[in-house]
Length: 403
Image 1 (cartoon, helix red, strand yellow):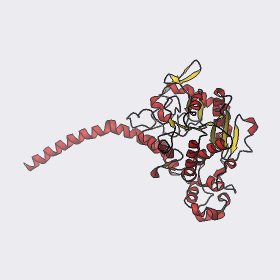
Image 2 (cartoon, rainbow, N blue to C red):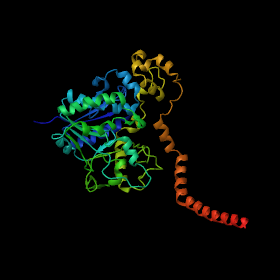
Image 3 (cartoon, rainbow, N blue to C red):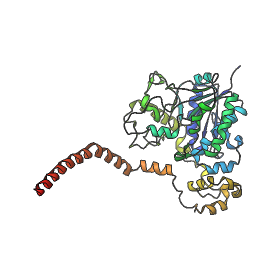
Image 4 (tube, rainbow, N blue to C red):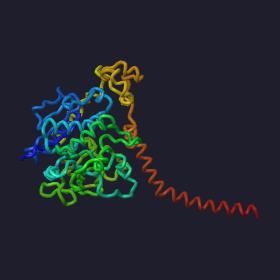
């Protein structure tokens, strides 16, 4: 019996060029499969579904309880990840997909993924780990702490089938994401990922796919080298199945915006093997309309009156789940704004993650890092040498004074 195989991803409408590039690269190797793209915000005035090579799924299709509150309490990254389990469940139950792969929109498929579909005949869930080898001890990023805070598995990819075991996993995962799909490292949460550390313990028939050709990204570049032979992308001399351009911005020369350039282990300047694949991906994004789509506003960033929603107000709302019904529609609730005591006409307050990113990418931080290395390598030994010299000299003077 022919299996109904599909691939899906999730975007806000400003990521349309990424979704197009992903879908086109996937369909090149799987022309008989179907692609689904969940667009979490309004898109009717920007995208014509008939023009796309994928089928669009709307948030309202997923039957998420209290959808306005769900969309209000999460920022765009959190919302896209919080809907993942609901999307997978919808496609399996409503679209009769038997074997399904989720891929983040900032992924380029570089080879056939038939191997994963075949493995979903024997396994119910397929995951890819962030790492296959330990990091160098060089005080650069990413490092152990970086990955430990994000989880053992990267959820830019997950494969799942329509078995009862897989459905039980989705039923377990959905309420986790509904309630706590947040970046809260102090309390152990990192959007949808940290929960998945439990999956090999709680569920059977889970495959951890360790082939280095899957999910190549900035966090595992220390153990992977990219090349191209006769038009085919390779990783470590074997097939490259997909490259995950996590945090990549076509307008920037950095490999990823998630790592401060001053602390990043790799850049295009010291990884010549990456230049061609990044240049190729950038060209595809531009051809797929990135320059226009990237300017489209995120619909859930504003109240219905047009005022921008501060992130601090989302945090406030999220902390009061028992009072949501009293606020009514949070996107038009005057009472909510009054209770929060926030002037929504003022610029939004940066979240802790945004503040940290701004610091790490600032000139002052780069200077501190350079000075720190300079001090560690040259000044500290000099201080120690002079300290010993002057300490010895001071002791001699003190002895002569006693005499």
